[in-house]
Image (cartoon, rainbow, N blue to C red; front, side):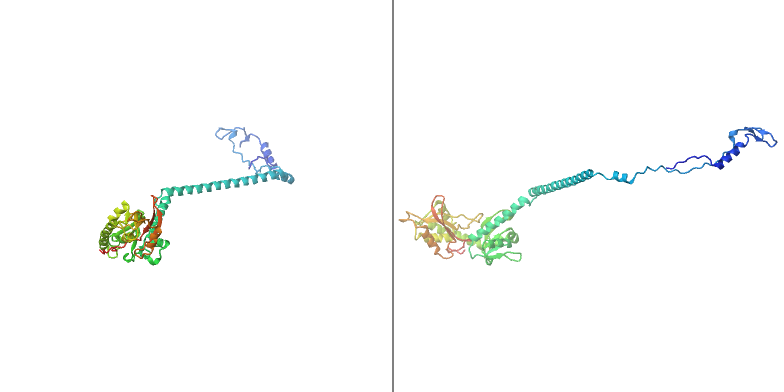
Length: 391
């Protein structure tokens, strides 16, 4: 801060002041008269004393700095600046505790944030899986259902179709069939380059095959449905291939049904064959496979036979598809028979047959009525014309 200080005049200044003081207050005129303090002008007017010429006195000034603070001894400064050991320890402990608490607090915050993120992601996933079409449970259920249908269809072919029959299928279905034990040599893979399924006995009509052949599949290549599995796009229809075309196959099937009806009527007239009411109706309608009819006629010439029933067709099978299984046993009290033939004897006789009259399956089982029977089953598809009618 700058201050302006007025100081008294120096010695030279004091001499000048004395010379001025020695001068009289009045001024002598040119003629020797004395002019008082209030002098008169040349025209007679009085000039006041305070109207004199301004003072030319010079006032000297200097810059003054603010006073410096009082200094302290060096030892006193160090003593004031250095804290005591208890204070150092207390400060160190306080800072350490703050850092520990800060780290723990951040760890807890990070852990809570991570848990929230995980729970949020899980909730979003569950919501999407429940609401998104074709995803989550619905999507997994559809895929699982399609895989289950393919497995069922492949199992049916492995068990029901003749061991030497050629099966036409798309690549995915052929892979499943191989997994069921059907060798690749029996599979006709239907791809875009294939012209048709001719050359096979059975075609697996999956969605891909139906899309490939369209209406020609049922009208030209394979008009007869043996069995169907599933629904919608996952549906698989197993069809019998018509080597001569759809029209020729339908004519041959009609002629075969007529021949089966005639042979069934003859069996119903045989006193050595006893059939349940349901079995009699099926025989009369020509619904029984020609191989079964020939087998029963042969057995009835040797033993009294009881027919408990014939196996029903596959699901959604075409009209006229024959019934390929029968539950049979030895009959008592028929045509003076003393005792019923054993099931093992019946089975032994059937095992001695040759194709196409050798059954594919023979199992001993007990019906709901308690009757023990031998279930005899032939393979699919049923051959046409075995009863002397080629159509």
